[in-house]
Image 1 (cartoon, one colour):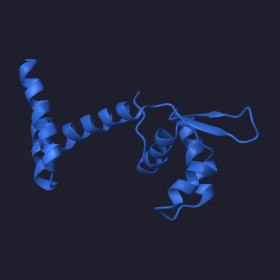
Image 2 (cartoon, helix red, strand yellow):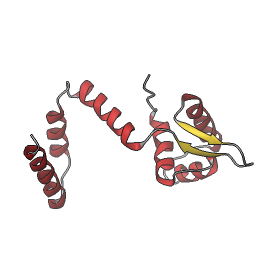
Image 3 (cartoon, one colour):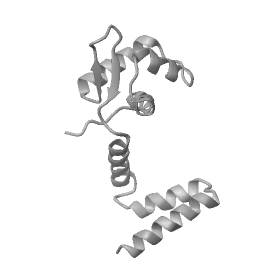
Image 4 (cartoon, one colour):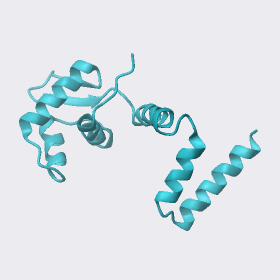
Length: 124
């Protein structure tokens, strides 16, 4: 069964993906820069994430160190697939068109997209 992180769990995972391994205090301090989150809330969320299998905890030292058990790539892929299926009725092209119409892309980004599309065309 696929484990789907909540929005709060995703915020914690973002910190863990960036730093590779953290204490609860490390994660809390990072989150507190952008939102009002209590330490005990962060601790409880990370304990729940441990139970769900989203993170692992090394308890060999006095300070527990947490690491992500799911990759950012795997999580992005699953979330994107779900969004394409539920919001865009299975159409990846509708997703791309929506993104490109909502966000102003730089010339460099557009060149990267064009190059990627050319590679896809050449491989078919």
